[in-house]
Length: 81
Image (tube, rainbow, N blue to C red):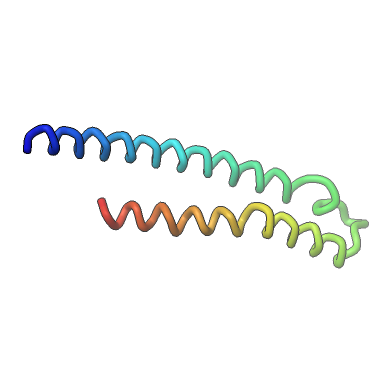
């Protein structure tokens, strides 16, 4: 029984560390997304609105939707903590 408890504690610690690493990675990716939005055609006044909206949709589809999925997963992990 003690061996199982130690194993569970070790696994939980490892999972928490993995989660923290994933959160840090997610923060870096969010900062990269912010940089993408604040660069190039999206900040140029001469960019047509339709083109800017298309670029924003690409950023949303590529990045933000994935971040939202990961966020849901992380929240589920925290609930079971």
